[in-house]
Image (cartoon, rainbow, N blue to C red; front, side, top):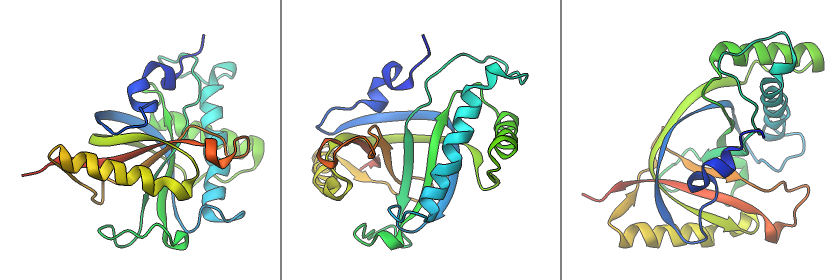
Length: 211
């Protein structure tokens, strides 16, 4: 059976609907940077997804080609994730979607290295004629965070974020959003197949102990 990160690491991907604290270890991702409203049909965000998924699946299916990845095992492609911010990270106003800056990303197994990602990008270019030059490989160690399972539409996220705010305040923590630690979302539901009120999204906020 293929290795499924959501099932094997439930503490990271399947939190409860009440806030909790988690220490997130270093992980590897393929990623694309961009800006603007993610809902624009032909916007940068949709274009980013249009190359992220083909590269992710090229890596997943590499064992059926002549390309060898050392340590490879069969796995389920992990869910789409996103880091989100605006130019003013201290007073982020997420109601203005046109002001969004983001990193769209998909986790890859630890056995995947940068050379493997470059191979997958070439495969997607060769087979699908998709330019994947904006996609890159990165390691990301998020560290101490508070997270919650949000059920509902993207526009109702403030309810869950307010719950995180109250939780970290009452437990002696503060938000620790910086240039390297951002508002983080993990999308467990496919909006094309799920009604907005049933969407499941992991909301994760970096925190630090109050001094």
